[in-house]
Image 1 (tube, rainbow, N blue to C red):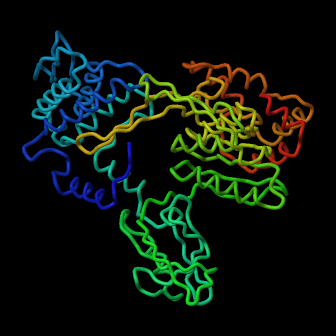
Image 2 (cartoon, helix red, strand yellow):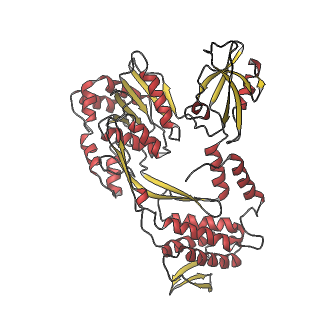
Image 3 (cartoon, rainbow, N blue to C red):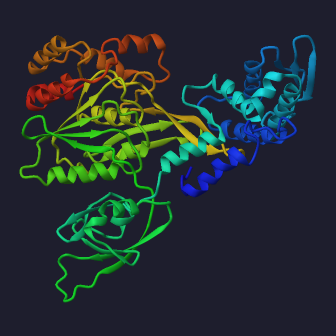
Length: 513
């Protein structure tokens, strides 16, 4: 789903949710049957062909209506003899004909709304919850039968999340003072400023026609931000312009979303080993990573080894993790997503553009490394490109698709399962490190001694993990994960990485598994 709504539109959505209708989402006369029917019908139509597990519309409807009992335990809904029946504590309250067609999502949504309206009329608990509360409880109960990641976000929450994702628009420029001038100190990657060719060092002589001077610096930097879609005009002077007098170029920028910084170059462990930390994956991560790699590899001499720190990285945009993997692999598979919907099935392959020029690579992970970060770590490990160090990762290998509903809410539905290049599922299993730090320094020293001799203590466990195929039993998952339990990263990870990257035999031995 394209997230391109301007911030002022989102504010109007919030205001409409707060002031344009009753706070509980109900109509003035009571339960809003029409709203519920439209929302539930649209949701059932979207879920049925896309959910990872094949489910019938009638079954999902009944699961959702059981959410009424979560609000009022005296209520019970059944599907009997072609009827949806609502029972109270002592008697049948309402029976409505179930749609003849089991795939009639709109019809099932309408029938469910009729049951909910009758329940609302008899239950003070449902009246207190209001239309929006009843709609939300329908989804809560429905998704209790799914996975931990499928969910419904009510309109106000969806709008607030949109605001958090979009944020204020910006130009991507950071200004600074140099002598009597205001200059461009930095240009954010993939920003409006970068896309127009403005470079660091350029002199800004005026903004929106008004001359600028050093005493305004704080206010000028603030003026770079504003509502996404609004414009700002800069008079930009090339410091190398020899014309007399120099003529500033008038450049109008349209403020846009500036991705938060997620890639950081950290102080190196030892000479020749660089550290890059990725805290998450948003729409700017791959560009930020490419820029950081270009800076590192332009050094004299360039680093011969790289530590990629993914500890605490909870994931984000899958495509960005794929692009980062592609920038470190000379070729090969990155992974694949498999689902029932043809659009959910994708194969990701590297195109052969290793930005590190074959530098040795270690990847740090921990129990909080999840989702897209796990996909990146697994791709590098399965291709023999990196040694993974740390503990078992979280094990989130499911991908969600998102749609908007008629009430302004959003639906997140798990529709594909991610497999590592060698075919094993990331869900539940997580990524097993080639050097485990979970059990402390003594265990790490023993593993190091074995690796230095060309032996890997974790080889049998790694082989079992790579041989797993979905679905994986809970007992099998727990048995494997117990060999390197999930833990929080520590300095021991960095110490182990520095040692492995400097020991040729140990590095090559670990890469083999």
